[in-house]
Image 1 (spheres, rainbow, N blue to C red):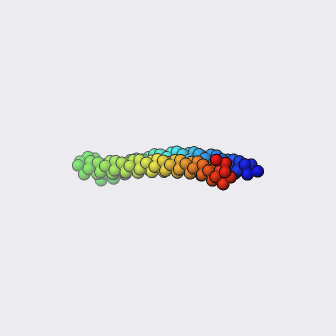
Image 2: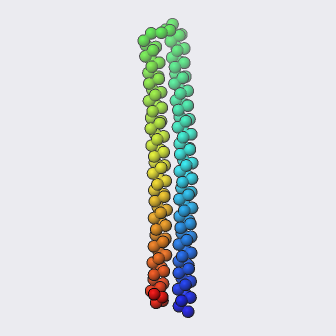
Image 3: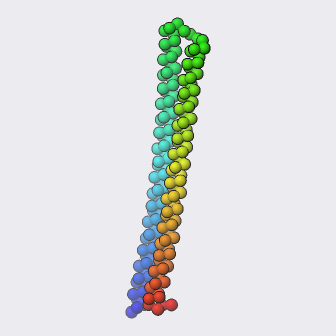
Length: 144
């Protein structure tokens, strides 16, 4: 009779470990999908920000040209300097947005690595828990 009870306990431990491993892999898979979706979202946001920055710079440039034309200024260093300043500001905005996008992607990548490591740790814990349970059961029932 003790052999039957130990067999049931061991089978339950093994089944529980299998379920824990399966769920850990499911969690890791879901985290990877979430990370990919987050990266796509960040790319869309960065693209939209670049488009808005370009539109804003074009509008400011057009307004400067219209205002200078209304004042009778068609050239000169003041107008050229002002237009160059707008271009420089646009470049700064686009550079900053690119850096932020890159950092967000790194954060997402590190989060994915962390989730993967947690899943692997859970796997190791499940395997060792099953082994310990098997050992305890075997020892308690003098199976070995």
